[in-house]
Image 1 (spheres, one colour):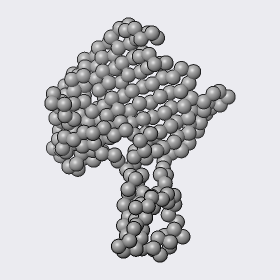
Image 2 (image 1 turned 90 degrees about the vertical axis):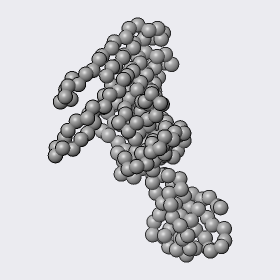
Image 3 (image 1 turned 135 degrees about the horizontal axis):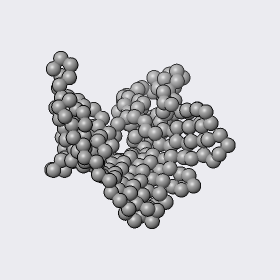
Image 4 (image 1 turned 180 degrees about the horizontal axis):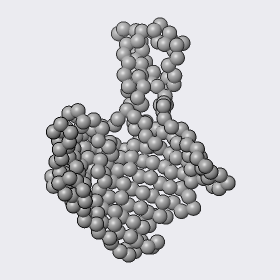
Length: 239
């Protein structure tokens, strides 16, 4: 098999494809665009892969005194997303054909820019119709005078170590580090799902952490204090 880059699919490109027999089209590199298998019958084929392109995405946000520039990469790009094996059917690890924010530049007028780099781990989906369930972890690195890293962990497991649909995508821990030293850690504990009744008798579930612990540290990483919040809900869902 030959592997070649095929960055754009204009009318002239379609004509060239027709002239050498289009055998198949599928999204081989999971960038959301079709890739083409070309060649004559019973002969070696060539695969033309599309170049990733974040179509219909916000590229720039301008507000008074600030300009944000946003870059994207496909979830199949290992520099932005690391897959982690997980299989507890119907929840499985799978790389979605979608684009993820990979880099943000915040430029204040007259000042130095601050940049943010994003990395994702462990995309999951539900094979019985509920679709994409989020990631295991998202890391945001803020590059300024001091490097600040925020690591958000998601999808708590039950007692058997299994991700359940009602808790998928919920945070379990958020850790903030400055210059490599942990300054704050927030833990979301003891998730509970309560059944609620909606319009026309439709049932839904309210899922929440019953306890939230916030630990604070000094610049040297020494633990200073822990604040704990306990959450309860009445039959109407109010705290």
